[in-house]
Image (cartoon, rainbow over all chains, first blue to last red):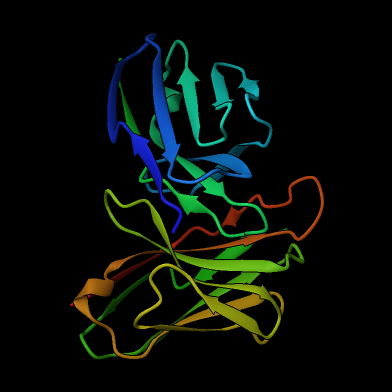
Length: 111
Length: 115
């Protein structure tokens, strides 16, 4: 079955620094989504990427979908304390409404 | 709109006891899902439903049953709870069509402990 791997599992970042989390799928995806879960909260949808090579930005967050539609990345610039949480990528295959979630990257920020 | 709600928020069970978790959504979404979240393992799909009266198994269905008698409700049952079912359970829903098709909206979660 489809597997989505996400690295790193933990990211400790100094406030103001940049970091990237990566997502890789064992199969070609029709789309990939990113979710953020704050400590003690529930996952909240951030963005969906559909096209090969697609890049989308949300303020300091940049999301990219690989050319082969098997990998994705989330890059955060100038990390702030509000970025604390766990970021999940989730992919689905064509004609499949189920999402396969990565294990998540848990981000902590040193002020 | 309340979005997706889950009851209860917390529950402690003894091994062998049964319980039902209730998920309700007021967004008229077709699809509903039950996940469990364990440390370091992300979200794993237990069961899902593509419409009223239909359910299907996900990645980790053993030990759980579900029902979707009404479009807005999705129930998750544990017939005989085991310590391995200690987890945080999330319900989610998603629309069939529209701009946010495939986007999943999550409930606040139920933290279950089985002793």
